[in-house]
Image 1 (spheres, one colour):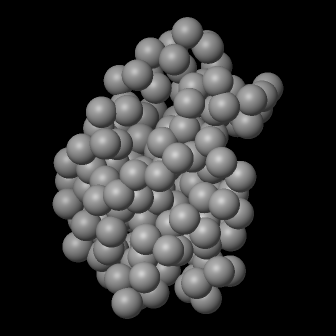
Image 2 (image 1 turned 90 degrees about the horizontal axis):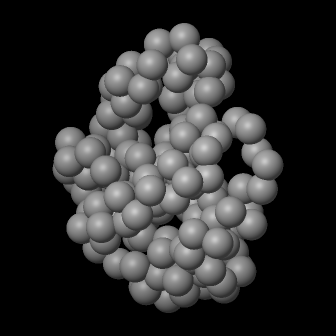
Length: 163
């Protein structure tokens, strides 16, 4: 069975929906951001601060290649992962990419005051990044679902699409 790869902006629900989808489908859940942190031994925010975004993106690419080799998994990608062609190419080798299309206001409600989001420290910059990334998510995905729904409903929708 192919993997289901979730993409979308920070706060779109990739992790929560992914875990719910894994329960529904009996697949294992994998988060690329968690794998990057495990590989480096420090949180993503610390990777950004110590080594910069380019270094993080290289680690992310390695993890995308590794997860594409997995079978029968739900893979949650980082918010910027599929904005890079090489990551999309690697991930598509392992499954279908699903875009959680979530409104910016919903993203803000979900993220709240989370200070562990290095690219979400300035709301206007975050909005600009959201607008910049949206067409890239649309181009990368095989399917798109409404990410504004509850995690359970979104996961059920994806599970139906994956049948």
